[in-house]
Image (cartoon, rainbow, N blue to C red; front, side, top):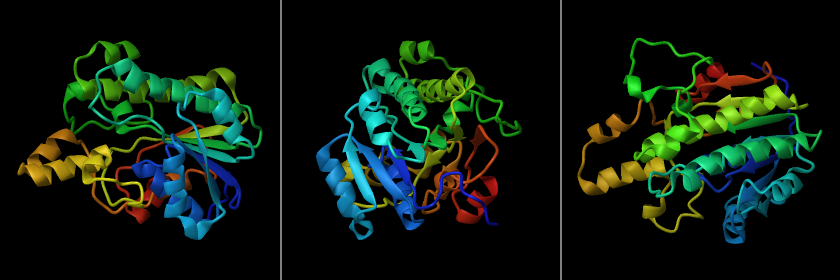
Length: 284
């Protein structure tokens, strides 16, 4: 199947969270498909490591240091000249003490800032937002094996739920729904010239796009760290199954996010339950 591109090949795409587990894969696939990439990174060292990881694509990959993704001026400056944005910068960890400061505010304010920065540039045609199945699924109801969820389903969690809970998993799930709702609210209220595609993947596991930025196995991304800790602690696979509604064990190439830059109905939500390329093409 051949599709036209909303964001033309050869144009520039901004990737937030570019040094993260999924972000690095997205950058790799963008570069492989002939795009130029600007990566928003939190430090110059990380940015230099990222560029070194994909040095065969020089000078198609560049970076800008944005310590806080809610920094509008820096993000708007970096977005200049871009045709699309992949927004992936959002915390995923349970090792937090201040749920508002470390989870909820970065997810909410980060998404709001990305939308505002995109609206400042008429060149931007689409913003692809990585949300989560956590923003769809109501975990209080259990696994619900016979329930069919659609794009109309949203987690009932609120910002206040995330702040007031004592469970970091609940706070994380709340951060994903408030971040996604912020994007939809912006579209409905501001009606910008660009459109959005939202992806709601489950837990994602797989090899790293690069080990250039990995200083220790203890610094693995959260999902892969779960497997590493299980392997080194002597626990069983059951512990992993209890944490995840869906597992994706296929080696990941983030085709879903890249295909989401292609022409599709405006303002769409996509669920990726299998990252095998053929299934991804089908679902997207």
